[in-house]
Length: 64
Picture 1: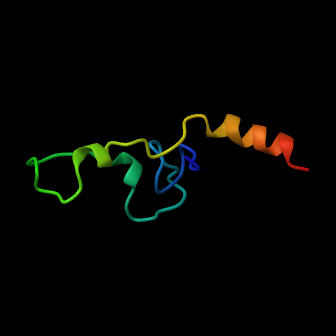
Picture 2: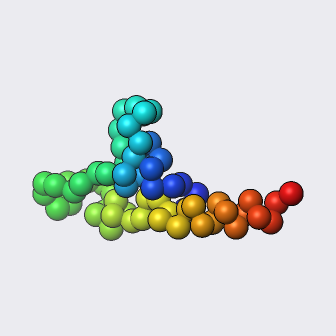
């Protein structure tokens, strides 16, 4: 996942300095089963990378 956990759109704990309208990383499923065209499993997938800072540091160390 290329998104940090504080990403305003996909993060599970988004920054509040940027308002993108909807926050996909913090959606909660409520209501009836089968009411959506998207399955619950697809909505519950990982939306951000909790190891983003480590990954970013490794990539920065390799790139000139």
